[in-house]
Each structure stands twice: as C-alpha cells, then as structure tokens.
Image (cartoon, rainbow, N blue to C red; front, top):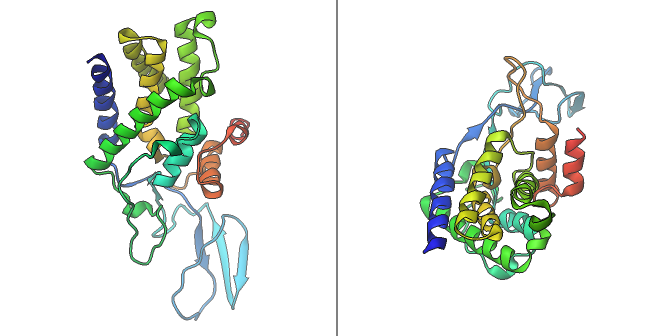
Length: 267
C-alpha cells in the first residue's frame, strides 16, 4: 500500500507534466535561410544547407545566411519525442542494460513518404502510451535499485549523509537524463520526490522514486532545445548542450555520454 501511495503521487505529477507539455507540437525557431540569386531556373526547387558560406551547382548559386531573420517554411524546430529504440538505448546508457526487461510500448507509425520513425510531426503521446511510460519507469527504477544501484549512485549515504548524497544523485543523474544541467526548480522538484520516497521507506526508496519520475518527465522523453534567444532575435543558435544532444542522437541513437557532456560543459 505504501508503494502504491508514492508511485501514484509520482505518476500524477509526471503525467500531468507530460500532458501539460501538449505531447505534440513545435517549439522555438532555428535553421539557416537560403536564397537563390539565379534567374530563370526551372523546377521550383528549394535550396538548403549548413549556415554560413555559399555553394553552387547546375547553374544555381546559393547564399546562405542566418542573419535575415526569416527562413520561410522551415523556421520552427519540432519537439521530438524519443523513439522506442532511443528510449531503450538512452535508459540503458543511464542505468545499465534494460533489454532483458522487455519494455512494452505502442508500435510507432510512419507517415506516407517518410520512412523514418523519428518524424516529429507524426509523433503523439496518447494516454495509453503515457501509461506505458509509467509502467516502464516503475519497472526500470525497481530493477535498478535492486540490481545495479552502484552504477548511478556515486556517494555513500552513510558517510556523506542521506540528504547530501540524494542531492548529489539528483544533480548528476538528472543532468544526464535531461541532457543539460538542472535548474533550481527541477532540482527542488526531484528532491521533493526523493523526500516522499524516503519518508515512507529508505534512502533507496527515495532514489527509486526519483528514477521513476525522471523517466516520465518531458525533459527526458522529449528533446527540448533550450538555447536562449538574444533580445528580439528570430533565429536562435544552438547552445553546446543542444548541439551535443543533436550529435548524440544522430550518431548513436542515444543520449550524450560523459565525454560529450563534458565537451558541452566546456562550450
């Protein structure tokens, strides 16, 4: 009964955050603009490429710029939810291999003419999938605390003190899971969740509650891009944390490892 109490509390908090995030949509602005200086070219094709510099080909000269403030129909960064494979890979990198747990998620859909599973425009998070995320989070958290807690816990709660050790865990695990350092509100929320778990059990119960919550939070399930804008800037350059996340999921289909996070920290 006690376990049901704290897991339901965590579920209400995290699922309400998930649904409040809208579960679908687009956030931010970003990307290079491309203009063609050629005249009379046929086909009506569009130009694109990396920001800065210029390119040419087949009689078309392109000038790419990130200073114009307008990028036509591609001026929004989509809000990407982790695919099923990305979820399993990311959790395994965070907490140890979870493939043996046989986590169950709804099959992903592809859109016509778009064969990839990470088409952000087609992603949704219906209530049934949110419930599957809850079940997976509880399963992973319980397995982690029972079998491999030392992988994520870098301090001794007896030697360092439970509160201090919990704060260390929240800071380090939260930053890896969210792919950027926690802000004050996130830290306070996760410490409150740890205290709820600790209040009805042990130090480890609190850790289990934190893991259960983190694996359901939008900051983990979605690839938020939080790069700040300067003034009234329309186009926003990716900061080092967002760039690390893009690189990592492009190359490895998982979250940034320690080396890439260190590079992000160093700018």
